[in-house]
Structure formats: structure tokens, C-alpha cells
Image 1 (cartoon, rainbow, N blue to C red):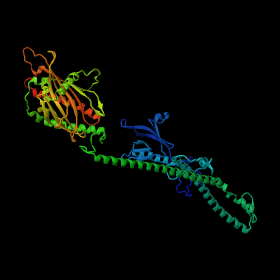
Image 2 (tube, rainbow, N blue to C red):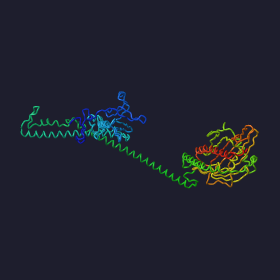
Image 3 (cartoon, helix red, strand yellow):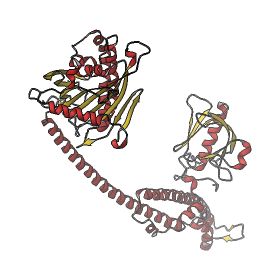
Image 4 (cartoon, helix red, strand yellow):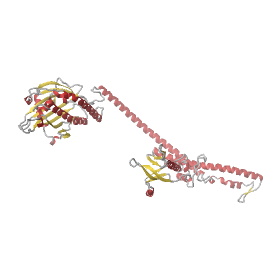
Amino acid sequence: MSDNQSWNSSGSEEDVEPRDESGHLVGVVDLSGVLSKWTNYIHGWQDRWVVLKNNTLSYYKSQDETEYGCRGSLCLSKAVITPHEFDECRLDISVNDSVWYLRAQDPEHRHQWIDSIELHRADSGYGSESSLRRHGSMLSLASATSGFSATSTSSFKKGHSLKEKLAEMETFRDILCRQVDTLQKYFDSCSDAVSKDELQRDKIVEDDEDDFPNTRTDGDFLHNNNNGSKEKLFQSLSPKGINGIDFKGEAITFKATTAGILATLSHCIDLMVKREDSWQKRVDKEMEKRRRIEDGYKSALNELKKKSHFGGPDYEEGPNSLINEDEFFDAVEAALDRHDKIEEQSHTDKTRIQRSSPVPPGDVYSSTGTHRFADKVEEMVQNHMTYSLQDVGGDANWQLVVEEGEMKVYRREVEENGIVLDPLKATHSVKGVTGHEICHYFWDTTYRNDWETTIESFNVVETLSDNAAIVYQTHKRVWPASQRDVLYLSAMRKILANNENDPDTWLVCNFSVDHDDAQPSNKCVRAKINIGMICQTLVSPPEGDKEISRDNILCKITYVANVNPGGWAPASVLRAVAKREYPKFLKRFTSYVQDKTAGKPILF
């Protein structure tokens, strides 16, 4: 039996793979050549010099650069080689997460590379089922067990991780397989030697019976009384004489290996039991946490069902709303877009309706009147004239949020009890209209539905005087926010200039009041407002003796709004809506006034 051959555990030679003198499988050769390698989507396939040697696949940019070191390499021991399903020249080699995509110049070269790679993998011990048995040389066994004894299992101390214990089991398995191979060789050799000895002994017995001396090559004679000669004859049957195997040493090592396996298995079982206990505790903890969450959810759901909110409990407005801030904003923006689309469709019909109402003489607006809210109206007018016309600079902390042509919108961020109360201020200049006309169309409810797109319904609750009235109006609901209504006093005033060179000021102020005929209801959230529309008319002298036309007039508008929405809504949503809607409102309203006054006498 050749020393280069590796026997399997059954002693059969059927599975033995032929090897050369160096121990490599017959047919394993190094291979090198040009293969196309996929680099990336920019550079695509690039030719590379690929070398297959010592179970390693390496590649270089070119054959000339091999002396400078490879650009990448793969160990083929655990590589997976996959011929492409459709491309006959392509093969993919993957090791864990690393994949090389290679293409040969033709299918024959691809087959050559695949066969060579498979041979290298088989030679490394990972290409066939006898991978463990091919490492069973006496030298490797001795090196693996040189420091191992029956008591060496103490080196595998408890407390290691399960991963480490499994690695130990892998080591023990390799050692045990090699020992089994060695012992099997010994047993097979013993069996062959015993068979030969029996044949020779039978022959010697026959010679003794014939009482003929037997002459050996060394000159010794064997007669009937030759016990010493028989001992000399069977010296070849000594255990140490068979292939130089120390049976006693192998048995001790085998015993130590099995003891190590048992000890490691015991440790693995302990670790798995501890891990099972840990996982069971975690599962119990998670189950308890889930039970508490489910109980809390059911309790909260029952509380929500007990409440009666307009619009349903799942999407009520407020800090406990089930809609997050982003969803709230998206829903509001979508609803506003739908309102704008509906308004555009109905705008043509509105412009066809010619509404008109008698315009009272200007002196009617010069005084507040004698109604019960007269003092409050006067106070509001003075506040607007004092504070609303102040410059936006200085310590007022006004922030410019929108600038479109002549129109600028400012905001001051104010919150009270979590509710956004940001004051807004807008300045605008409109050609061809007067301050009187702007305020008239803003105050007169006859034209309200023509330019106000957010109102669902409104009615005059009480007329206080020719220039003052209490108005109740409901605004279209913007889901998921609750519907709003507002009850306010609307008054229109003319403020004469102190200097004859300064223009007169027209003003409309709307501020919230209470009235017995318009009490808050559960259907809507009552909002509070304080709004001022302040207008001044600037006239440029016409050329020559021409009369003043609308080309010569310019109205400067200051619009201020303080709105309390009356309920909670995300601050970012309220500010975004205000930033979007106020400029649209001003442009829509001023364009409406320009259209209504075009071609009509100027109303100063």
C-alpha cells in the first residue's frame, strides 16, 4: 500500500483519489490567462490577467503588473462557482458577500477555467466528501494532539460562548476523523499480517511433521524443537512493527479526544440551557409588555368611544389626535387645493352676476355712531391707527415671510397655551382703485361671496348703524381640522387727515363680540379675530388739463390680522396655511375690486 494514498474509514480503496508525489490531486495545474471582469456600471467589462494557483484566484490589471502585486484575490476553499444560464462565456465566483463576474473568450475556455477551479477546490479538501480524511497524516495528527491528554479537557473552560464551543467541536471532529483513519490503517495492516502468518505457520507445521530440517536464508535450521525459532519468525507480528504505528499512543489520544468531545458537548448543553432560560425570560417580558400595551390600547379606545366629537373620534382635532403632524399638514393642503379648484370653476359664474348696493355719502363714515358698541369701535379704530401703521422695523420682531411684487407679508410668532396666535401684517399697492372703494367692497356683505372663498354661510345678526353691523359666518371645513365659525362686529370709518397735503385714511375693523342670537355650538369651534384693513389713496397730477383718471391713482393697503383659532392644531400647519392663504386672499380681493371698478366713476 503506497504511503501517498489515504484510506477511508472502511478500509476500501474505491473512494481514494490519485495524487502525485507532492500530495496534490493528479490533474491539478496552475492556470493563468486573460478574462474579462465586470468592474462597475461606468467602465463595464475590463480585461484582467487572472492567475489560479494554490487554491487562490488572483487578478492583475495586466500580465506586466504581476510583479507589483495583485489587485484582488479569492480563496476558493468555500467559493461557489456558477456558470451563467444564458451567457456561455460567463462564470460567477462568490465567496460570502464578494462576487466576481468573469467572462472567457469562448465557452471552451470557460469550461477549462471551471474544471481547473474545481480541481483546486477538491485538492484543498473542500471539493469532496473525503475532505477530512485527506488530512489524516501521522505528522498532522501528532501536531494536533502533541499537547493533548486525557486530562487536557480542562483547557476548555466553561463560560465561553456557544460559538467558541462549536468551533472546538469542529476541531475535535477533525482530530477524531484523522485518528479513526490511522487506527483503521492499523487494523487493516494487522488483518493482512495475520492472514500471511497463518499461511506461513501452516507451512511450518507441515515441515515439522515431516521432520525435515528447513534451511533459511540466514543459515538457521528449524527442527521440531524450535520454539525460539518460532518466536523469531513471528517477531514481524509485533504491533510496533506494522507501519510504525504506536497503537497504545493512538488509543490514549483517541480516548482523550472522545473525552474532550464529551466535555465540550456538556458545556454546549449548559450554554444552550442558559441561553434558553435567558430567551424564555425575554419572551415572558415581551409578552407582559404586549399585554400591558393591549390593555392600554383597549382602555384608550373605550375612552375615545365615550367622547362625542364632530368628525369622529379617530381623527379629532387636538393634541391627542391620531393623525401625526405630517399627515395633518398633507390633509389640510389637499383640502385647500380642492377648494381652490372649486373656486376657479365657479369664478366665471360669479363674475357674470352684477351686484350693486347704494354707496352712502362719505360723511356717514366719519363718526362711530351711537350704538352700544360705539366706544369699543372707537377704541379699535384708534389702536389700528396707532399701532397697525407702525413700521415693521425696530423691536417689533416682524419677519418677512412672503414677497411678491408690491405685496409683502410679515409675521410675528406668538403662542399661548400651545395655541398659535401669530399676528400677520401685509402691505400692498394697487393701481386704479381708491381706499374708499377697497374698504367698501371689503365691508359690504353684499359682495362677500364674490371674493371670499372660505365662507360656507353667513348672515347679518344685527345692523348697528349705517357703517357697523354684527356678522356671523361659518367657514368651510378643512379636514381633519374642525369646522370654524366666527361672530364679529364689522365697522367702516373714514379718518380725516390732519394735514391737507396728507391723504385721508379709510379703515375697516372686524373684531369678535358676543351676541345672544349667535351662541357657540358643538358643531363648530368658535374662533376669535381682530382684523384691520387700512387704505390710503395717493393721486398723481394728470398731464395738462386732463381730468384725474384711474391711471393717476394708487391705493396703499395695510392689512393686519390677529386670529385665535379657538382650538389646537399643529403650529407648523397653521403657519404654513397662513403663509399660503393670506397672499392669495389679498391678490384675489384686490383683483376683484379692480374688475368691479373698471370703467366706473372714481369713488374718493
